[in-house]
Image (cartoon, rainbow, N blue to C red; front, side):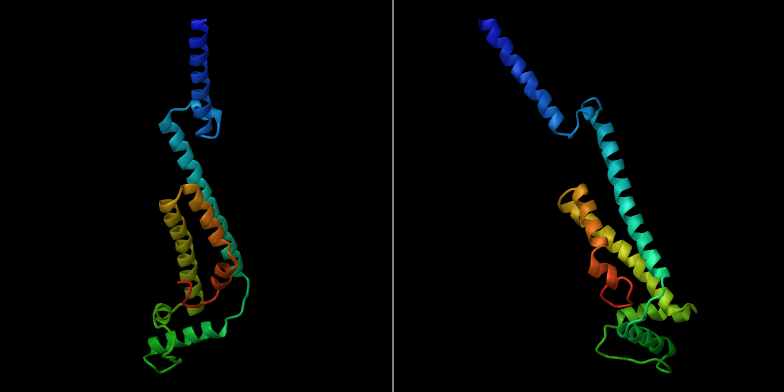
Length: 173
């Protein structure tokens, strides 16, 4: 009788250990893999999923950039301020109430003999992709990598970020 009780206690302990091993990685297949290999596989999946989110967002943004769209009044003012800076006040306009950093960035395009609208869109595209990476990095450091991927995908396709990403405004960069 004592041997049966000991055997049943050992069996219960073994079953509970197996169930704990299965519940940690969310799949019983990972029990067979060493920890380093399992960690490497999970990092690859996370890298590919983040790359997929950034690539999909980038492709959607490029598709919208290639469609014709209007230049809003504020965007035109920033372009005029960039012309004012690059021409030394000979052409363009200056509004002192506007922040001067975005027109300074856009004025680089006139020195390079590039259309300021196209240059502004390229800069905004790269800064918006960087913003998505920054959201991922901050969320990854505070919570987990999976939460970072989810936050980056929600941020990249949010309507206000998506809408303002195509306007040459100072809020996005």
